[in-house]
Amino acid sequence: MSNTDVSMDNEVIERSGNEPGAFALLFDRHAPAIFRYAAQRIGQSNAEDVMSETFLIAFEKRATYDLAVANARPWLLGIATRLLQKHVRLEARAWKGMAADLAAQLSPDMIEQAGARLDAARMTRRLASALRGLSVADRDTLLLYAWGDLDYAGIAAALDVPIGTVRSRLNRARRLLRTAAGTPDGEQERAHGRADAVAPHA
Image: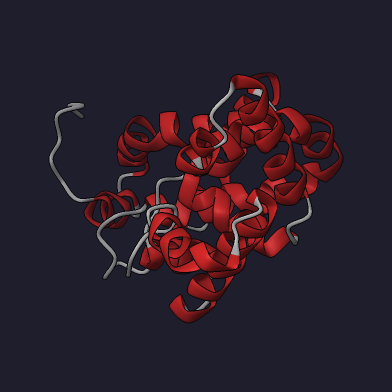
């Protein structure tokens, strides 16, 4: 099969029922994104195993895939996220550095407000500490947005939760970032506008 196959993911999965080799196209399309997401959470040395197991499980469960959904990436990221829950200790060891990186990614405007490089570094540490305090569910939701590049609907599909739950979790994360950044009450509306850039819109 050509790598230039333009079939939608759901068509590929349906075809793989009778033609198992067709599933390789799904791997070609999405393996880099799954590996990148896993590597950002637990490091590159372990991401390969998570990526491989994600596609093994996906292949085994392909008959249960909702063929009405054209894009399989949320489904694959959901499988990867559940697999990553088996690596809690590994992720916890890596989280300190990752949280700092994530804080810098999510709130560049808040960090830039600090002005001096030292103040920006201090701000990043506060944000990183706050992010480490997120619940597992809120953290998975936030990371699927920040590192999985999913919108509300995609995150809801990945985690098998209502879109309203995704919205609530991301709003909690925004409030946490605001509090950690020490945003004055008088700036809440401006902070909310900036934080909206952090979270996807439905």
